[in-house]
Length: 120
Image (tube, rainbow, N blue to C red; front, top):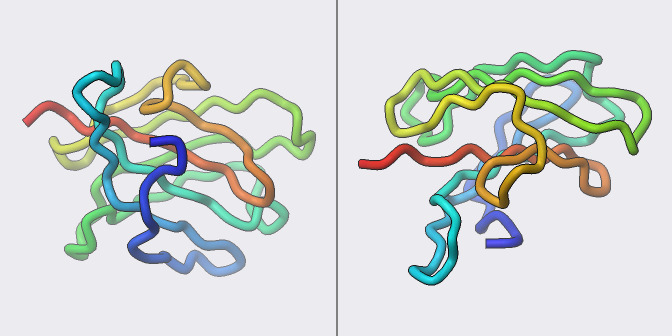
């Protein structure tokens, strides 16, 4: 839950890449939604604004569009918008660090985004 699940593949994006993790399904006693984690890295290679269509399940079709600003100050708060292009994933607006299953954070040399899975 805290690690974001094992990485299943990396999507090259030129100077940076996006790591896609396996979906995480919390235990029954945990009060979180299932989610998928994406890592943009390295932060030093990211443009000032990210707006990427991401194929999470590897079928060749984008599943979500992720947009966020990349402030140069590593302590600056981050906000993310996610547009769902596949009903399996939830849309997020102006998300920060509200929950483990719905967040954007800077960790070491990466920016992590967690997108909740929609209910089946």
